[in-house]
Figure 1 (cartoon, rainbow, N blue to C red):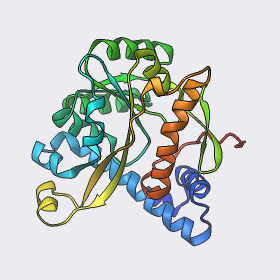
Figure 2 (figure 1 turned 180 degrees about the vertical axis):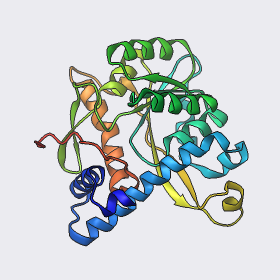
Figure 3 (figure 1 turned 45 degrees about the vertical axis):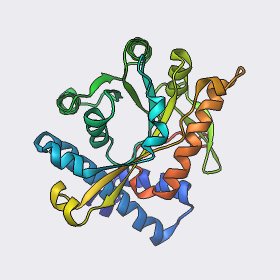
Figure 4 (figure 1 turned 135 degrees about the vertical axis):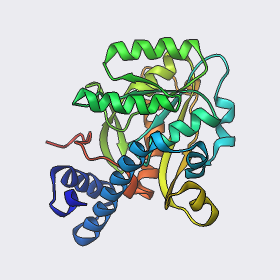
Length: 270
């Protein structure tokens, strides 16, 4: 918690973002930011531990909510788009999904130094995930090819726009730019979008002993979105707003697990 105590730049950035989501100020905001930084630290500790986890431990750390409602949207002949935010531990969720639901293809921001990025990729591949580095248009073309060719869940972290061509939506009563990729891919492939929203929960009893952890994650499946339900020239914006609204509600409910330590896409930000 050194970063929080010393008000390091990532902690200050998180505090700014959480203030805009929640309206909190003063000590209440500081407490929430501390919880947020603890959630971030937990994510990194867990992720680097994943290479040593047994499948039994992994399974005990993940719980699903709402899967039966979206099962039919995982089609047999092509990919389905999953839209995620920087919430909870998406690596645990991806590994669990590969074991119990469907193969996962994910796009990851290329980190520096390269060795760190390569380590994250190797860890995720160990659990069966296919990882593409974010490289703009080339990555999108590869996602198109993959999504049209095989049954997979294409997971896109979309609350932070890296494309430079973000779509403006309303979140928490404010204008925000988010990634255009999920809606663009879903419309191009004619496949559905499934919001996957993740939070932490305390574990107790047998599940805690099996997981060998005090913490687990809950994988909430939101309302699936079909591309044919969005028409007109602004259909990409409509579809993007639909998933962004679900994500905004979730983050407002569980702000401590939103790991937005970077500059966020507030339209009125300097």
